[in-house]
Length: 155
Image 1: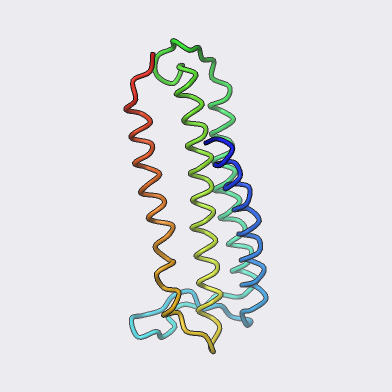
Image 2: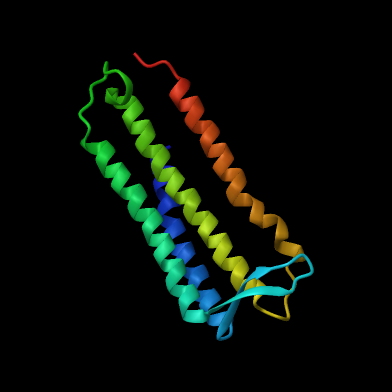
């Protein structure tokens, strides 16, 4: 599971970068990021501000997750430890945080993609609107996985 989660997290970096570069190249000087129910634009931001804000949010979230993983790795643990001092629980939580970072990256990627897509006048969002639910569904699944992981009795 750890290898799969690591692969997803690493590939999510590249996919986010590709989506951000695509969105940056496809939008005009002003990026619409807020719309009302009729599709009218309520909020605009400069293209460069959108790019650097996206990169900053992405980096801050990933630095927090990596820092938390480093703190967890420093905790001494044994096979018969209690709580976070149990080695298998600690390794499971490290894997969970890596997966959480990957899911956040997927959510950031879909947000950047949809902002870029919504700013292209000739395209319609109706065909892709269901993909916006992928991130929240993965996040709910991942928190249920955390509950399952924490409820396992460890010896």
